[in-house]
Image (tube, rainbow, N blue to C red):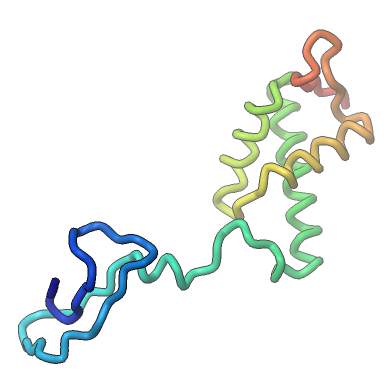
Length: 131
């Protein structure tokens, strides 16, 4: 199958992992621009969940931001369920960086240990603001 400047070996419009492409050397056009599909760009960019290349100082700053966001949310709401708190922290921090749910949970555990928050006696998935 030939589509402009490249030839796709398999049939159909969809892409799969075993598809292969080849440059169409017969393609000539001064009027057309070559547009690289976003699929190729997605494979090159690093995954947003990877944290192995983040410096320790940046991780520490992000932890403080996460804790401050949790405290700010809980101060306003007084109590919140675990999933709601994770979703709200993710929504607020998404403009700065993508926080992993595991790191948010660690921040919550740290705040529980330092008695900024406590778990509800009726519902263990509910947090109550103390400070």
